[in-house]
Image (cartoon, rainbow, N blue to C red):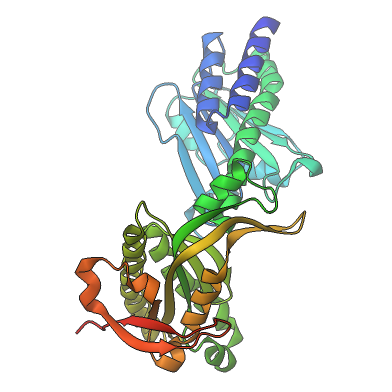
Amino acid sequence: MDDRHVIEITAWLMQSGLKGMSEADLLAGFCERCRAIGMPVERSVAVMDTLHPIYEGRAFRWDARQDIERVSEYGVAGPGNFSDNWLRSAFHHLETGDANEVRRCFHRGDPVDFYLLDDLKASGFTDFIAMAHRFGDGGTIGEIDCFFSHFATRAREGFSESDLAALRELLPCLALAVKCVTVSGVAGTIARVYLGEDAANQVLHGKITRGRSDRISAALWFSDLANFTHISDTVDPEEIIPMLNDYADAVISSVQEAGGEVLKLMGDGTLAIFRGRKPTEACAAALSARAMLDKRLADLNAQRRIEGRPITDVYLGLHMGDVFYGNIGSRDRLDFTVIGPAVNEVSRIVSLCRSLQRKVLMSASFAAIVPQAQLDDLLSIGQHALRGVNRAQELFTLIPAL
């Protein structure tokens, strides 16, 4: 491999990283270009940590001869096969030591002392090298502080010194390209996790100016846990967060599965919106979410009873109205949410659930657009005063299923 080849592969990596090519495609394209100019790379794996609520990082794989799983996620470190395998890996050896590379030449009798090396040797591989490219303090985000990669060959004499020199020169470029794509993905993940899908998309597309908002018509969902204050005062404090997580998961998954957007979590409370081409579509989606939630709550409470843990229910207020949807806050601390009288009203509606002994309360404006097929499930419970609202409003509830 001469300097011209190095320059060509480097240019391709930089251009592909800037274009946002996926990490797996970057690794595959890199390996294929190395092979095209005579480097006998036949298998490669790259690993990068990430910031994600479910998994800790991702591994990317490439093989010259067979189709393999190109991308996999690995969970937060803990007991189990992945953790044990990681502790036996060449990557963990590099992570915990000072060296930036480790090599095992099977054809020279080097030990098969890392995870998977015995499989590589049995498959005819003759040489293996793993490398770590560490990021500086200013270039890390959470645990994203290193790019690990390894390469293996079946060439009779293994990798030549010129092969290794080329890898050492090129791999920092691959690491930078993969890091660029990974960090971009992390930004999207963080935005979606904390803002919700739609709000995240708007923010990531540049809608971050304070005061910039749209007036929209939406079905508003405000829910909270029944008797949460009493439960908090009477159960073991260590139970509170797991309990909130269990019930929040039931609420959020129901809203999202029905096409709604969760905008805010406030302790045990959840604010969400549903939109559709027609108001009746938004209304139907909100009612569908409530039906899904009822099923999830039944399953969740049954399981928690078996475990001897406290159970509760979810109060829900539903309203239809116009709101402003966008950025509200100070110059350097914004919240992407909905505001307006309708938001205040739906929060007041749900606050009446306990005193009126109803799990679901909805405004007259919401009830007016309930799909025809579900009208028979509605029951008016009369006029009620809402705190901070000038006049009493007629409220409706759902007739419990027999």
